[in-house]
Length: 183
Image 1 (cartoon, helix red, strand yellow):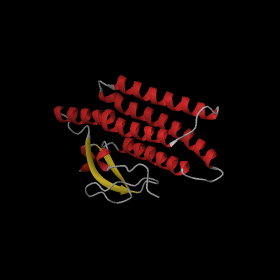
Image 2: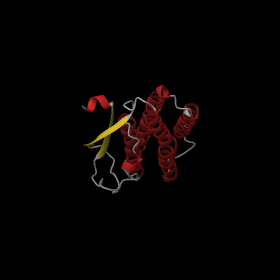
Image 3: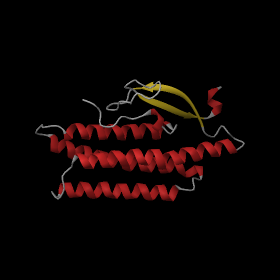
Image 4: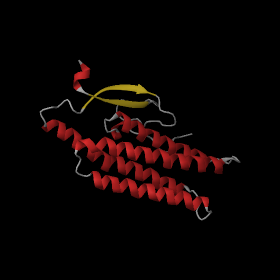
């Protein structure tokens, strides 16, 4: 089955832990898509479990991402936190409505989640990555943030679209290291 969300390598920020979490979230959306199209008797239960996992994974990711941003002095951190809080509140309300029978999980909802993730990564998260790169370029200690070495590692449930040389179905792991570790 064709993946619902192809994760492109040009969407990587260059921070391993954050990138891997984004890829994992994309994998959860792909799993939700597969369950949505399923006729199995346990599909509703599996869908509910995946939605709970999505909320918990998203909550952890937002916490980790904000903790990662904090020491950088990123001036848009408050705005970024507000975006995170709004999405998390919407996800939690959505699940509550499903549990109460007031709403159903639809393809349109999944598409909205997909667009939100892509938009957030390409705009809000990429703005942070650009800030870090610009800050490193203007400081004397350029070793603070250096993106190095590509390392291939499979990521379950995620296939990458053919962008540049990255046509494999494996996940691309970009490691962030201190320049002194490269010697």
